Structures are given as structure tokens and as C-alpha cells.
Image (cartoon, rainbow, N blue to C red; front, side, top):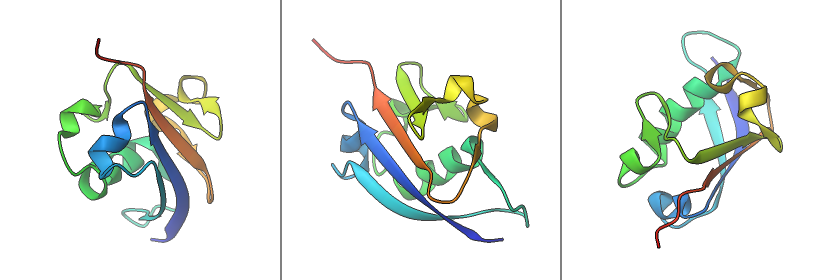
Length: 102
């Protein structure tokens, strides 16, 4: 196991689920002796460690809800494998809600 430093950013209202803090510099521990960290692992970590209220506004099952845009180093995660996207040290992961009330 090792710790991986990441920067997580929450926008479009999602920061309200994380004590109204938009940017989080975090150390995420890889699990089960695995050296790499996937987005699926990160989302599970975020749900346990960062989301303080209403996790259903951020996640559905083991992925983000529809309407949450995910960028890994400014690249849409849909282009890099979504849950299977492998993260590297110092990556920046941005979560933006595209759903707005009216």
C-alpha cells in the first residue's frame, strides 16, 4: 500500500456536500497491496472521507450520479475509461454538477 497525493475539486454545488470547501488536497491510500488507484477506488474513498451529507446527491451505486461531470487533469473521464481510469500521483480530479435548480 502507498499514499497517493491528489487534488480534488468540487463545483456546481457539489462543494456543499463537502463542508462548502471546493478544493481538497488529499492523500489516498491504495488498497490490497495494489500500487495503482482507479477512479472507482477514489469514489469509494470520497464517499467515506469527504462527503459529509447527502451522498446520494453525488453518487449512485459505485459511480457518480448522472449530471456530474468528471475531469481528470482537464480530460473528461468518459474518454479515459470512467471507473477504470488509473490515477497517478498529483493528478487533479474535478467533479462538477451540471444539474441546477430553477
